[in-house]
Length: 120
Length: 107
Image (cartoon, rainbow over the protein chains, first blue to last red):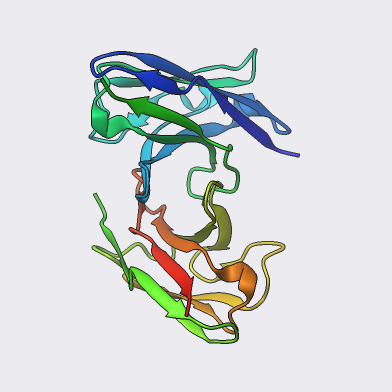
């Protein structure tokens, strides 16, 4: 069974940093592309970015609102995906979901989400 | 970016009603469209992929159609478990984009 478990959310001040983790199991993580999707309170879904598998280059793509501030990385030895968030803004307040990314496929698997609140 | 526009934003319906939600893309996405159902406090759940393919385990009252820029999600006979918010998503572009959501409420 595929499981994605996010952690690391919490309250942070504007301008601060936070690192989210996503522990993956039930599939071959090292072969998988992975994405982060967020949802602001009461709002819709927004893709944040993705990381390809190392065999596909391990490169990353980001949505315009987070490019230059957020960094996605992975540790295949730990089956873990990361989202490093710097220079946080109030508009980054959201539930952050870790998802599988089938590159050309829909989102089959989602984590339960972790809430990030950016507020002074 | 490809913009996805859903309508309506909110829909009030009764159990047993036939419900249709529309999603329009700002440019052609062929059939690279998915529909998700989300309930409060939960992650979205995949219902339909490739515009009209029903995900395994999803009731057959859900169906999708369309291609290019116009898509629809239809629930043939609304059930109590179907009151939720529905999102379309294009995965034609490497930058995924979602519709703003349609909340299906009890009439």
